[in-house]
Length: 196
Image (cartoon, rainbow, N blue to C red; front, top):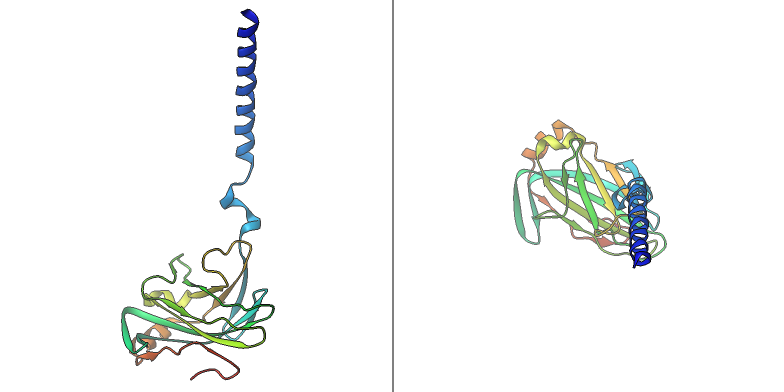
């Protein structure tokens, strides 16, 4: 009887020791959010720069804006401003659409593809340019520090390459966008000729 009791106490002491050691070790290990290897590889550039995203290059061609945009025969009016970015994707290894797009400013505000914001882009085979457009409504005070982020996958950017483009906008652009006529958002297209 004494041997069974001593065995149970010994087993309990070993288990408690292993739990304590495991808890201490867990504090030293990075969690899923702290894994620096999983972070996306951000590649920065400006309007007109060709940015390498491993399976494609992306170039922002034009940045425009207005309080009103026309898409699919309807007009969307914003209480802020619509920022419209036209860009070109050229796949290098496989068919590559860019499905992730978001705008960010220096205050940490982020405008993704929710609500009325959209990214109109189509898949293209290697070597054939795809002409795409992303448009999002933002407050006018965001324009002077606004960046556009583009990536292949909208659901998961871990380990992937992300283009971060400084749109080069200013407070003067915010004023000009507030007075601009309605902007007709072009449909995505393929080929060497960019749509007008």
